[in-house]
Image (cartoon, rainbow, N blue to C red; front, top):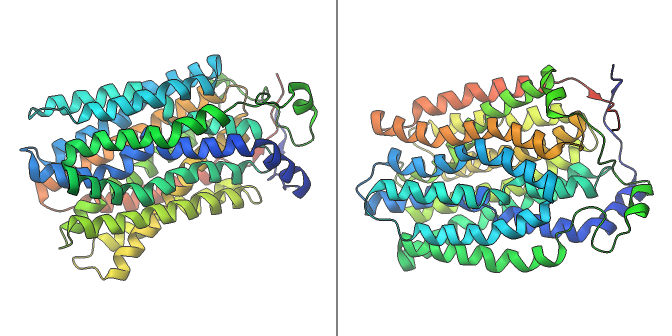
Length: 423
């Protein structure tokens, strides 16, 4: 029997000590998260779709299959990555996978007119770059931080928000100057230039990088990395399943709106550049969502905070269904869905650590990421096909509204935090 507990109140002195000890790993994790496949490809996808649509004889639905391949591939690659991280460490995985991500982006610039070569490029990238998924960065941050874990995870995944704010405009500029093929290659080079040196110098797991192992374990603020449930144990309870289905629901809504935001807005009369500007607003609110959700989860019951944020895509869907939008409404729709996207991965990482512990974090995160990947992966194709059939996105936006409510209710149903046994 587990004893239920409430939220852990942060202690200012121990929280400060955690940041003093783990700030280098935190900075490296932030950069890695911003340069990873799930950030760079996800947030630039709508810009590339709009450009490829005008250049190639492929429908939007066919083009969107590319990003869906990447997201759905995580059904297989995320659990494998989690096991590799648990066995070999996050540092080794990150330093291997980031250069391979660059090579695979360069490879997309060589695809031919046959859409199958485009899909093949996404398959290769999905495998080679799997080590840049959030599981890598959150594993390390969860090790270094306990009392300020929510805020630290928010700061880490703020990297994805920075990518969301900068990458669409940067990709639009690259496409305008060099074409979409060369833009993929230059984007890959940019990723490696920004990320590799910080990862090499600062990305170390708990107990390394000059921090004595014994002293670290005895520190008041140090987490207990061998506390928690195995995947098999977690699967016997309802909490993991509630979290899985909730994230499946909300991932459909968030992914569908974000990956199609530029086409949705261009259909309302905006240019690709103007629509990309609104897509960039998503990044700003992703950053705000990361920090605010993390800060609040350290102090309040995390499922309630999660439900609040994951309910938000309903508002964006209602706005985007309108036949005509003002500048304010377009900005508001982008900002609101960005808040939800900002909280999404923080919630996943935080709730795993609090409900199931860190002993088998990689395996648990990998399993949960399967459901997240299914939702996020099928959404772009559903949106693309719906447009091909009906000429608009109204039906899929209605689906987003319903799924947002379902996901929020399931998160709340997880109940209080359990007290976990140490192995």
